[in-house]
Length: 252
Image 1 (cartoon, rainbow, N blue to C red):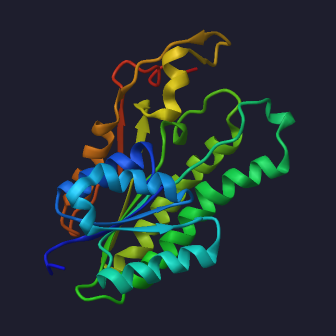
Image 2: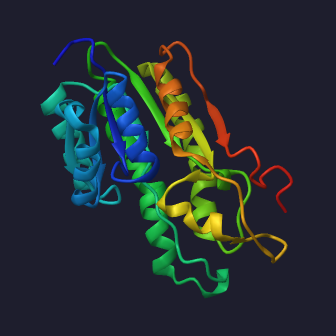
Image 3: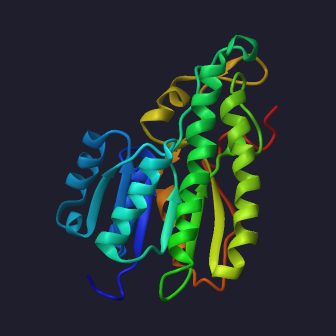
């Protein structure tokens, strides 16, 4: 491995924004560790990377499980020796049903992945980044437009994404003494498998169902690459990248 090659971990790297960002960072010369629950999806990302996959490592990971997260960072250090970038991208949601009909299990399944998983990965990144030479690194959290404004029937997802904003701020503050920068990217309507319903029509706060504009997911990946490209003396604390015509400004 070249000493100049930076190392990144991407959670949720098997599809959507995580897959696209993995390919973008590999194209920028990063070594990338692909983490996710479904190894078959991670392998598809590796296939899409072609020859660049030689600079990648697949580590099946459940970010809601502390032992699984520890193993992810241990394997990263064993293979590459350090960590320069963590993209906390893994996320899930609950069924779009009435708040009063959600079960505790449905609530906890979202909190465990979106919030606790991000915390566990951040904690392990701190341990590695503060002890390596050169010291420090960058953490980017995948927030959401839902970190600002909810969709109907999205209490668990919206609550966790608002919480990610607080965690981002706390991480940015607590990371200063270790030369660890932390920022958040809030992405709106990037076109992935998960946003297919948006193009067919999705429930609005007014009660009507309407089609929403989307953007190429590569624009989200490019934004992450930009945030990662800054020296550790500079930081994008918050960035919103969204489909220009999506109904966010004025939502509600």
